[in-house]
Amino acid sequence: MVSFNHVKPGLSKAIAANQPYVSSRKTLPTRQAIALISEHGDPAAEIGKDAAGGQNVYVRQVGEALAKVGWQVDMFTRKTSADDAAIVQHSPHCRTIRLVAGPEQFIPRDELFTHMPEFVAAFQTFQSKEGTNYPLVHTNYWMSAWVGLQLKQQSNIQLIHTYHSLGAIKYQTVPNRPAIADTRLAIERQVLEQADCIVATSPQEQDALRTLVSEQGYIEVIPCGTDVSTFHTMPKTDARTALGFGHHDAIVLYVGRFDPRKGIETLVQACAQLNARTADEKTSGRAAFNSANLRLVIVGGSDPGSTDAVERARIEQLVRETGLADQTIFAGQIGHTLLPLYYTAADVCVIPSHYEPFGLVAIEAMACGTPVVASDVGGLKFTVVPDETGLLVPPQKVDAFAQAIDRVLTDELWANKLRQQAPIRVQQNFSWSGVAVHLSDLYRRLLAQSISNTLFFGAPESTLPAERQAVDPISTDAASVSTLTNVF
Image (tube, rainbow, N blue to C red; front, top):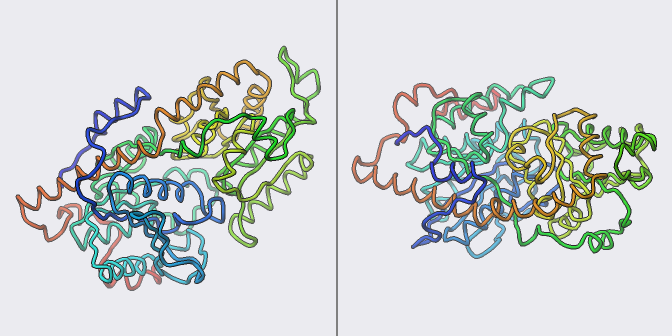
């Protein structure tokens, strides 16, 4: 395998200039089967439920968009309920396949890794029964990366990986590192150095990988996207009427899971601070909003007893303690059919995350013409353009979030400018169809390279150079796989 250490020139220039990258070819002459692996992020799951979030959206939308440009796409995930269908057909050439790996129930992510050898075995069994071989596998999240590395060691596949979350950053913001942390960090380094390509979703993520993980490995920057046919502008009055909001309400929106790393408590405290300001403090030379009309709308939910339910209970308690109970709406799980109405009805969408590799919520809100106030972290630095589509503020800084939200709510002329510019940026840079073209181009180049290497050098005994196998931090021989449950 040829090793590269740079971003594809054409794409990097396009991203630097905030312009879409155009591939020279958009469709394939024949339909090739490829596998997308997302061990915990079920592409067919209901968004906003339990751990379903941005990764689920990414894999599902990428899969369906790739099918439209000529690929046969099989998306593999873990079966979490005996009642779930084993196969969900999304379109003629795109489906979700749920493999049995461990008990058929929800398992927290930090407890899933011991079931990954079963996932590998189930994947191989499915291939044998179907008579299908996948020459290219695109994994998502670190546990799927481990699965991909096993498949790569056993057969001559092209392995592409997208991180979605980086342990080297995540563990900087949590008080107690979980027992699985060292294993995760080792695998994240291993896949960067041994995969055929890493897809970073922003230049900031690429920089983090180089700085915090490894200087080795080939990275291409291909951003996430959004469905611009679903998320688009519409009259705000229509959206508010449909949802039952008042036309004079000052609506502050949060969309996402209940997770301590999402920073919802920062948003609640910022809204409480705005609510407590005196009339004189609110005015400050601009038209003030009436604090009685402030509405904090939190979209996202989980089943009782789930991991996210604990965080939701904590946030609900904080809302009561800060005196916002009568002004806060917990909207629960909202499907993509209604979600654009919430974005459009809002005056501002707030993303107070401690870290986001990309931040799909930001571009969904922007596509609907809603200004975004977000933490100045990770991929949000790439998606949100200050004073053009919203504002970036330091993470976990309540005063800074309160000031930024206040500006959007009170500086009407400036906010209207953001509403006009935000959807233009999304349409030009972040459509799923464009993302699929970029990925399709990458896949074709890697497959062509693999065919060329095989023709000239023959099929290798291992797809990894000897020196790379020697530094493998996670043993993958049969004996160690069989004892993973004892080790971890």
